[in-house]
Image (cartoon, rainbow, N blue to C red; front, side, top):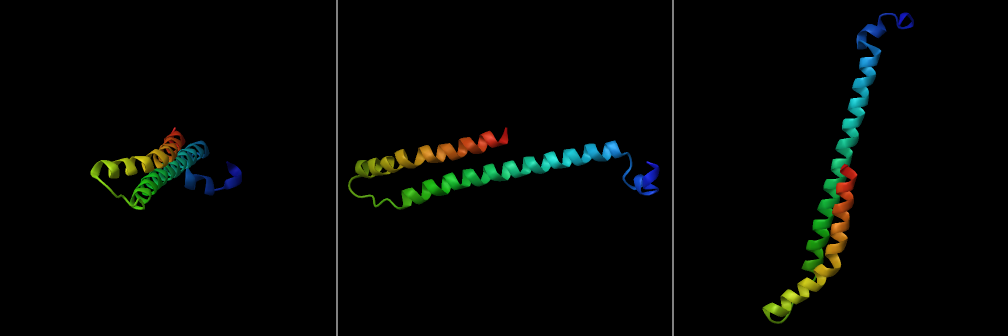
Length: 91
């Protein structure tokens, strides 16, 4: 690397530098995927909690449970989809 003068020695072997930079880029991408997955899971939980909190449950315990189950039947599939997509993003 004569064209670099002493500058090439600062970073060592160019192939090693390239390998390390590729590893760093891979780690950053992995961390971004993990952050996205965490956010998707948090969103699924928040969405479920918010939907249940909006239910105006009334009646007997069994009637209240049925009302909450009805909400969950709508919300849960969406939450599962978010979590599934988050997990697939980690692969």
